[in-house]
Image (cartoon, rainbow, N blue to C red):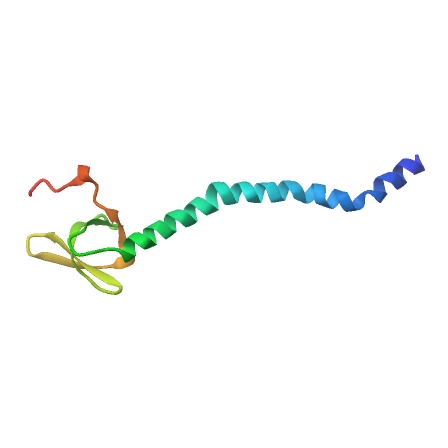
Length: 106
């Protein structure tokens, strides 16, 4: 009985690796399934915001649909209707208007 107890204690170095291996595997799964795709999505959105140009049709995070009439360093000016321009922070642009959501009054 004492021999088994001594043998069980002598392998202590490898048991730490065995205990940490599931945590490392879980971290890798989270990285490849959650963290990395979110970083790519954020990088793609930042690239889109940096390439905004006059005439682009966009949607804001607040739900405004408009056409860009002026682009500044941190803001854009949107034409949202007849003689109605709105200044919006550049980082509040959600993305381009989809073709399905085009204005009916054009």
